[in-house]
Length: 178
Image 1 (tube, rainbow, N blue to C red):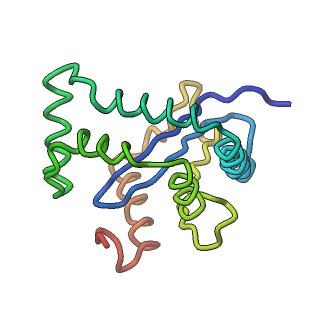
Image 2 (spheres, one colour; image 1 turned 180 degrees about the horizontal axis):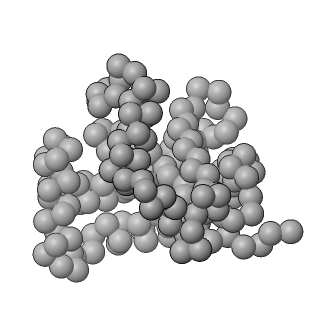
């Protein structure tokens, strides 16, 4: 039995108007399908936990989230990064954290459950899900873990071959943003 997970992370993303929940799992002993199944089970279990959560506990979490959103910036870099992300994403909502806290004032556990069922629940057949699996292998790696390049080979040519292979598979969609 493998108990060794190298890394597990969960977070949200807001990219070009698309909000997403991201799970990142790095493991040396589970298949991609096993990891996907565990994430689905986690979501199902989490919904049950949310359903059974008392209103008092729910509101404690809401208050904690509001306090987190209203914290002062730790550095000028954090503040400018937040403002630039608003500009890059064409949102221009420079008071986004304060406005989100305003929304938290009226949110209920039922609102959260409805949103969960609509967007995250494995039981919802209309849910959209993108799953990217990166499978590593020790095959073709030196003891340092880096790719082996023949001494006669040119790394530039090797990279060019890989890029050409990607372009061939991607076809006309390569480099386009939809």
